Length: 149
Image (tube, rainbow, N blue to C red):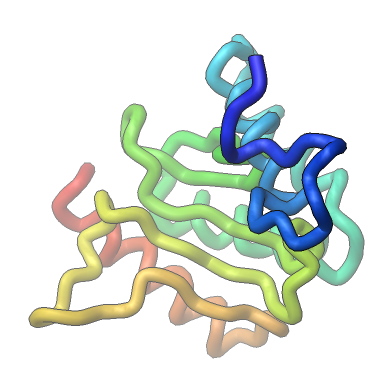
């Protein structure tokens, strides 16, 4: 079955379909939905596949999140390390290499309790982790889960 969002080999180069990276992420998501794999193992395997410096950053973020809110379960989400309350993703780490971006991203879903007024950030660019950023991440994850767990 061919879907409209999937580019086919006859398409012109000006096609605005999904990129190779986006298609790969969708395939990862479909695998995750059908897999019966341990979430922690899946996250650690996803981290190992990353190139440096993303791998080191992902390992550190994983440790920060697990230490800050140990009640969150781990799983992959579109091939990315993610942290959930039950089946609801709260936050995730998107490494820069996944979509050839200039920075990695710590993102939060709409299930995260980060609301502040009528507008608030839901993702944060990361180019380096220092103790300052680590402290901010721990606080954000605790806040994001404050009404969810």
